[in-house]
Length: 307
Image (cartoon, rainbow, N blue to C red; front, side):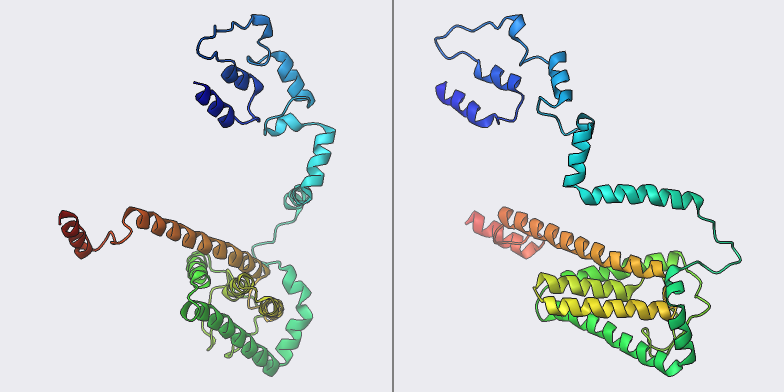
């Protein structure tokens, strides 16, 4: 009985309610009389108004509920510990005001794109110099080939499938979204037969697959501690983004979503591989030698067991 009592002391964490702990530790040992606790000494065991008041004043260990921290000092501490969340709260209020007061674009007007506005002079320069436009398009196509080469290299040569799986997830989602909503091609679009996809064929505007693919490759490089390659890809991705805006090959929202899609599908691919690895470990623990799906293995297993 003493051993059980010591185990109880070890199991009950100190962070529990002191009343619960006192109830466990006040159990009588063998040969001792049970101790009756008077009703006026039950403060630590039963909830009372005084405990609630102390909790609200901060003298009692507060629960994780946010309402228990509502005070000027607590809010100031929250801002110090989570400055990014505080900034996002302010931006939420700001953009709520912008959304509810911004004038809507008329249906007979072209879309309003701030990226197009910032690159207006570059678009005029590409329109006046078609050879320069084709040269930059060819360089962009070369960069897309570099992305694809690295992603397939990581799978076929290094045996790391995460970047390839992320790209498959990404292009599948892009195909679904691009087929669901087809945006109009900008009027100032400067196309080129050297641009990817080569040959002036049709393509999806939402979202930018080449920006997402570059982000996936860059994240994989960072995992492998190839930081110089990653920074090089990031710099080329920025130049690619400026060129796509200047040639009106994508809207700003296509490029921003492509950047976020690269992060998202890389995380999903990692999660997918983690789940598959856990499943393999579970199967290995159940049947360490034989697979579960092969009938021949099953028959061999049963014959060995019977012998």
